[in-house]
Amino acid sequence: MITNVGILGTGKAIPDYILTNAELEERMDTTDEWITSRTGIKERRIAPPDVAASDLGAIAAKQALDKAGASPEEIDLIIVATITGDMPFPSTACIIQDKIGAINASAFDLSAGCSGFVYGLDVGQNMVRGGYQRVLVIGVDLLSRVTDYEDRSTCVLFGDGAGAAVLGPVAEGYGIISTDIGADGSGAKFLQLPVGGSRNPITPSILANREHYLRMSGNEVFKFAVRVMEDSTERVLEKARIPSKDIAWFIPHQANVRIIRSAAVKLKIPDENLYINVDRYGNTSAASIPIALDEIVEEKGISDGDNILVVGFGAGLTWGSAIIRWGGVMK
Ligand code: ACO
Image (tube, rainbow, N blue to C red; front, side):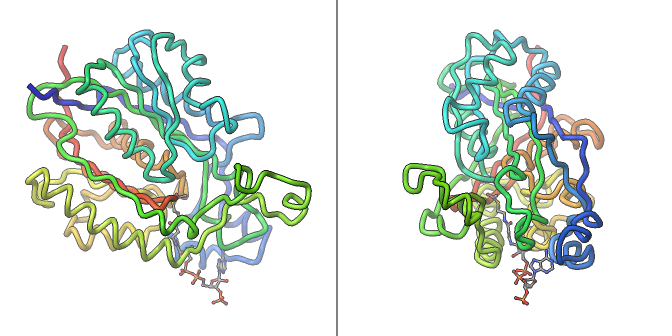
């Protein structure tokens, strides 16, 4: 019999410091009007210098464990979706494993940009089907650490944060009903941090030329995002045999309100079923979907049996979507 795998608890960590459009206006040649009309972003959160991915990830993880009623020792596996881990190695998942005392968990990082959390859900559910009882999936990014605050075309977009979910077996008819993950590596050049790896190790001249920052072809990523969000959500709905009118919450990756609205219109999802928080956090990369999910759980309320559709796109280029039927938690 195939195990049904669902979300048993969620958590998030959002830094306190708010970087507003007004502050960016003072620092560079941009306007609140430009940022708001092109992206929908009004403000974003920035972590203080002494806070790294594992710090935010551990806070989100502890909340998720609490809400799931699970102890750290019960966790079999930790998957951390991130492109801004504490350091190239060891994995941020190992650092978090130690921070939260998940002594029985194996741990690894997953690099799929902003699609990372949905990739993590898919990998995690298969690990539960393979016999694990509790898998912790964390999405965390501090893109402020790899963003050039002299480049107005990228720095207005990103913020820092973390979100987490505990996966485990749930009752029949509940949990992750369908997933669709994919990649198109030919688009790698459109969104990358081209230095700091084995291709271009950091050198003094790279630092002097300010080449150690994220680079993005915004228009190319925009076109890709609109296309894959439509295609991937169609596939995942079809696999689940659920019409879009039966989706209680649509949680798209929070990168740009124009991309979000275009996806919602294509899917005919009305505003009351669409979740948007990009205005408050900007693009938090792998954290965006689990933060939104936790806000819905905490502030909006999800009922047992609600269908949730999540979809992300990001560096790789990658995409991922999933349908989760909420509830079915076994006592
Ligand atoms: N303030 C004022 N003007 C600006 C700013 C700014 N902050 N940034 C760019 N401009 C100017 C440009 O210089 C350009 O001026 P020009 O016409 O004189 O050359 C003009 O605005 C238009 O620029 P475009 O890049 O064409 O603007 P566009 O409408 O495409 O919006 C944006 C740019 C917001 C980046 C959009 O392309 C986008 O959202 N793309 C998707 C990005 C994304 O989602 N990335 C995250 C991927 S997820 C991950 O894995 C991290």
